[in-house]
Length: 399
Image (tube, rainbow, N blue to C red; front, side, top):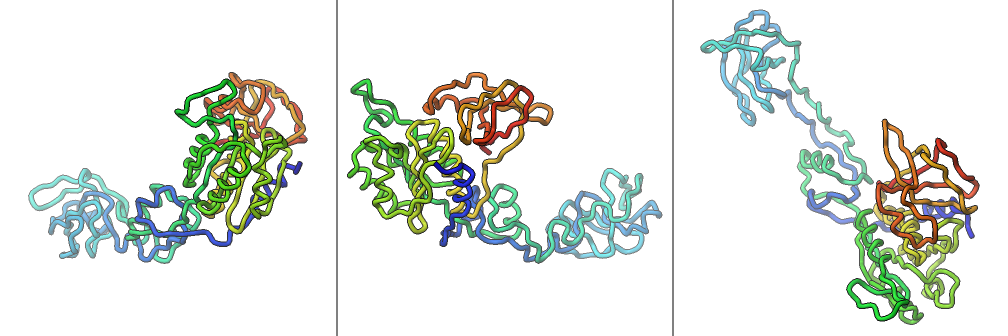
């Protein structure tokens, strides 16, 4: 069994030589990763602009106290008149500042009397005037390649008149579960040994949540020929194939053998981790196969640790998962000399994270209900020991 840290380093070192890209209409690019740098091709604003409704004046004229209203300058209108000594121009939010004006005095600071304004409250020079390039300057890198596109990025790109944007394609992830005991949703149970499949559905949800495109292939019986055909076909149609079951050492664990027989290069097989020690990762050109354990909790945890980084790798993206420090509210018993990922409840109180295990069952790696609630994973290395109340621990959040 390989050291857990080494397995993660090997995943990080994997290279993809051809990350696929495509152009998408701007709003359709939400949730995708940017495949190009976004650089400003103009200043924003291009000219001094009003930030409020008010009156454009020359600051030196404020001392006069009473100014003649020369004209009105609505937003979107071309400038027609200049501000000259002793006059002002009524100007609205977003309007260009008239030539000769360097300050905007708000409507609420004046009293209108006929065709004049009386200044009741003065403002500093330059007040409420947006300078050239206040938002961004021409030539500035605004959004870096590799950024996940969210609503702020869409807004900035719209201001740059970018209608279509280059993004990385989300990798297609083929999902199949092996096991003659598994029943798909809606299929009637005919004997007590059959169990309802959950792995393929939770994996589909994980792939969707963490920016892959799932291809649900359902359940396959423990038959080597069927498994070989299914995995071979999945490799043709997808970027990543993820399987559950069939990677341990039982008589009917065929997946590990099929992966090798299909000509895939095994990156690693077997890691000192609890749960999921029989995890297998293989590569064929720019495609990957991840063989996850069959137990639901094991397959879920190992998918978070190994599948998500590969999905991100196809998009040159950054991990949605991150680790924080938290304080134990009850003792933690270290049960294995392995890297261990233990379901826990996490709360945030006065800026500090706290962890407890209320309602979390101790047992096999099949207890998927341990993932319910405000859950995170307490992380311990194979060299860690049991912890006491108040100890600081590392906790993996799901983003």
